[in-house]
Image (cartoon, helix red, strand yellow):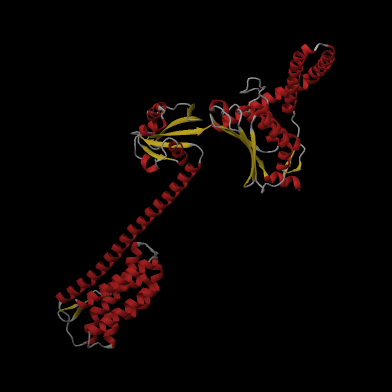
Length: 531
């Protein structure tokens, strides 16, 4: 309870008690006034100080005037304890801070002289009054002692109530702090990328973080935390479709710690771990915690690292054999051309096939070299639309031969970028020809650009047969190809070019509908090139 609230309670309760005591006041043998209103007055002044004491003193004096029409100045000083009011105000600041016994002693210090004045008032006011009767003296003494005891009891009850109130406030403060810490901990758990769920000793779900809920909602989008909490973990297992999860939780509830294991849920790979939860004091098992860590991205990075290692091997191999292969091939092609000129026309067909295959082999070697080069691309300010326009005649010629069409959707907001024009031309040409080769006659190739926040997107989309999901993950691996005569280096080369431009390339494909490659070029990189 705050100080203002306590002062309000003191002044209201003391004022009410003063009014009741004044209303039901009496006297002993019509001489000694019997009015305990001075007790709430003194207690209120000691606890409340001058801010509470002065209004209470005013009320007490007003009651004295109202219920004593024949009052005198001497009676006012004797019956109200008025001379002791300054002492009460002076003792008040330290009164509330002292221990219980000190408070009772201070009350008695003020109450004793006040009660003596009240009981002695009839004798002082009427000197001829005979109050020597022993029985009357005992009654007066009993009245004084009773007043003292009642005052001490009231202080004790007030302190007892205050102590309970303080304890309650402490408990509430601790509870609020605990709730705040629990909320902070829950926020930390929700923010962690690890999916977590805990169960009690009976296997009922007690908590689940947002990451785990996101995983659950991939199976049942309508579920909420309230739908999951309190239910058996078997419901969660049924949703995820993994019976092995239930086995691990049962083992954890039995106190067994199992090592991390890799499982697959949908298209993602997860490391799963379970641990028992124990009471820190007794060591008894009170539940278990289940955690999933999505390692799909880690697996992707590992795959990319393997690709880098393959590219490194390709580079070493290409660097060592390219000249040894190219030079003999150039000699062979030259002599074939000479032989063709001196041979019958009936053999031209065979010469053409041999030279085409030599050219194809030379193209493969060129792809090897381009893929193996690990140089920093020299960039200049280029507009992507300019590069596409330069390639348009070549692309249209290829498309016309195949009976296909090309649609250009170019966003006028696209700014200039820091590009290596030669490499970007190779990128667009490779992806466009891949799309054309994937389509039949009357297919349409779409080349689109658009500005999206801090990226420029280049989208090359075809209307071919699409690529199976199982093959999409391996498209950018060196030597992996979906073509009968492909080398598997074209898309790997495209990925290498995009990465040298600090961009990203992604593929979306649906069987029977077509494939779209999207390249993201950072606009900030172009700004950096202008500085």
